[in-house]
Image (cartoon, rainbow, N blue to C red; front, side, top):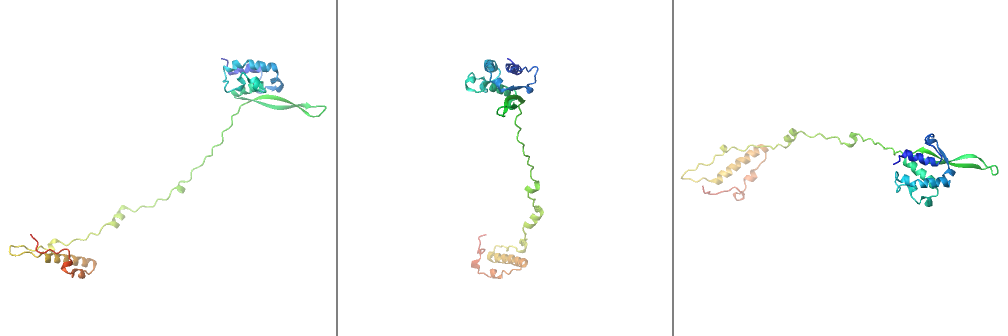
Length: 221
C-alpha cells in the first residue's frame, strides 16, 4: 500500500507540480489548471488507488459518480486529500492588470496550500473558592460538663432517722395503736420539713382522721 507522501506526490504530478524540488507550501495552482479536462480525467482514474488508503464513505471525491455530481471535481479531490493530511487548500485572487478597453481589473483565481490549524479550545474560567470564614459560622462555645452537672444536680434532703421514731414495743398483754404511731411519725416529718422550708403545715396536720390515707386500725400482726 502506498504511503500518504507518495500519493501526494502522484497527485501533484498530475497538476504539473514536482514536490521533490518544490516546497508544498510554496505551490500556487490557478483555477484554469483544475478545470482542464485531461487533468480531471487523470485524477478520476486514480480513485481506485486512493480508495485503498482513504475511506470513500468519508470522502465524496472518491465516489465513482463524482464527475456527475460535483461542479469542480479536481478542486474537491485535492482539497479533501490535503485535509486528510492536515493541510488546507485556500483560494484567493491575484490582480494581473487592467482591461485597456473597460479599465476594469483583471483578476486571476489561484490556490495555495497552508497547514491546517485546528480551532483553539475556549479558555477555562478558573473560579477561586470563597474564603473559609465567609461560608462557616463561628462555633459557639459549649458549657463544660462540670457546670452542667452543677446546675442540674438534685438537692438531696436527709430523711429522719428511724431511731428517732422507735416502733412501739409489742408484748403479750397489749396491742400497739398503729394510728397514733403513724400520726406521730408523719407529724415529725412535717415538722422537719417546716424547719427547712419555713412553711406552716399545721392546717394540713389538723385535718380529720377520715381524710388521711395513712390510717390503719388494729392491724393483724
